[in-house]
Image (cartoon, rainbow, N blue to C red; front, side, top):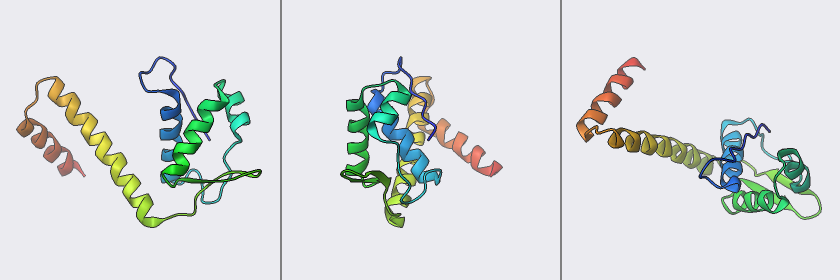
Amino acid sequence: MHIILNNTSMVPIYEQLTDQVKKEIISGELAENEALPSVRALSAELRISALTVKKAYDRLEEEGFVVTVHGKGTYVAAADRQLAAEARRKSVEDDFAAAVQKAKAVGFTGDDILQIVKIILEDY
């Protein structure tokens, strides 16, 4: 896993960790049934609290991305195609929402934003 945390970000560390692990699972960088680093190992590697890593792993498990086997470790959950598709869709929606928010913040109208999207789509 390649995790980069930003200590100056307004996003909590456990959310940054959760989001990055999700992205690696969705993209296939982390394969089905692959073991994640132990809570202690990852906390030592990232120089963060073990409780922070545990909170991120718990959230990933709640969302169905990983499975924890007590005494053995945490593993990438078996691929649920519908869950994976929904996660990819949510990721794209989040990116669009951030772009729209940024455009609105600099004064673009809805029509301006739609025009930009149409121009971009023409290139693809």
